[in-house]
Length: 293
Image 1 (spheres, rainbow, N blue to C red):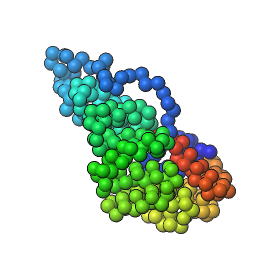
Image 2: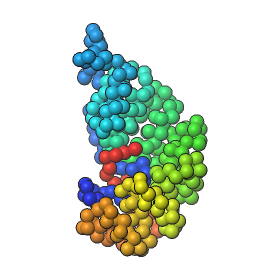
Image 3: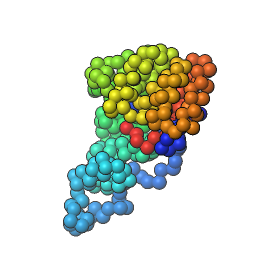
Image 4: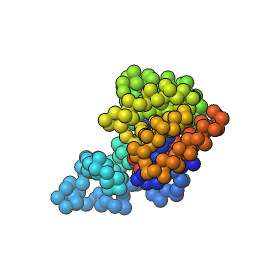
């Protein structure tokens, strides 16, 4: 049951902060250990393209600039070229994985992060990255091991605690998940991702009032995003407050999409708690978003 937004007409509500999206499994047409070898002549006599020295550091810097500017395809090409020049470095593989996640290509991102881990088995960023990618594909059981390894090294990392909480929510360990989010918020007060995930976890257990109290300041604040507002609309809808749900939904959605979502909320409310939790997780997993983080 997709929840439609104004811009794309695809699922946009009930999103976890790291936007756990399920992508289709595709054949991988390239070898991640030889990225860019067919695109860059690394044996060029001057090692240049035009007037720009195409060394490893330059490629990584240009890739970061392209990614920051939203040019993900170019960033991906640059990171892959950097990986062909320094095949033992983990950074280009991690950067490639993060970029692929932003592009919604979680299965390819898993390969990229695992390539980094084959070079440095306990790299914390690669461990977090592959866990995020597994969660994007609704496979929390595979996220557990890298999360556990990362937690051994950085138990007070708020972003890591959020990922562990998401994995706990996926397997219905909501109390444990909420404890992780709360600990993360102790370390990073007001963090919007932790606040959103805690609110959604509380909603999964039927504690709608506390969920609203937690998310309202974030969603209604000057930096509130459509994802936060529409997640709050979902929670109001689950509570049965159609007036508040309609008001929030209308801030980002067309009228027809608002009515569609209200009907979806009503359907969810009629389900048993267990079935409702599964349905919301399915919405989370099936929500398409190009801005993965």
